[in-house]
Length: 268
Image 1: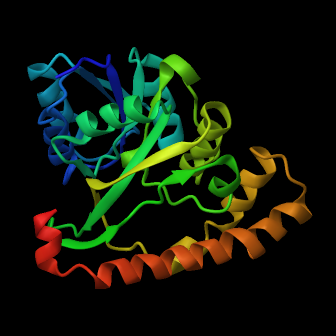
Image 2: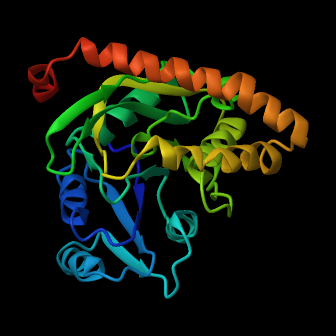
């Protein structure tokens, strides 16, 4: 297998004891082995850190940083990014899992397309790991349409540090992952998607639309602070561009899932 260079994998953890071992194991199982895993724990109150330390002791590619005060996923991720030594930076949330060939497929695809940013489709699973859905990604995102639709799965995202540089997440408490995607595409150009699902995204209990509605102010904050829109333009874009695009995206996801039975999911 070709060596594309070191991949720095960034993971933020917080009270992730139930799932973090599965996340780490999925990274250790990668067919592409030139990677480092940088986990920053955001002052967990369970035994997440103890579990991570077990892996740190057995694999020198895994590194742990611990924040003394809970500061949010953006701060945790930035701590890991600041310590990253890789030619690429990839992200994996502490309750998600990667397929074994995830890095291999994306690195080969990035070389083939000569692109700096890559993402993929992903499968959704419940807390017990039973598969429950699929999200098929768009073939590409430009600066124009990423501002209207932030649906790139964060745990599928990888970008080239050699060509873009290390890009930090904004300090906002929520939606900094979407803001990062905008910043990356502004610097690196069009992002391209691998249609094959390469990640298992865990749908946690409590992820209700009521909670999603609370994120509206953070959407507007992205428009204000990242794209420097006025208040009027920010609300206009959210109400008449972002929200309609999100409705269409959700409808497409439902249509895609009708095409896949549970058997199809298990075959992925």
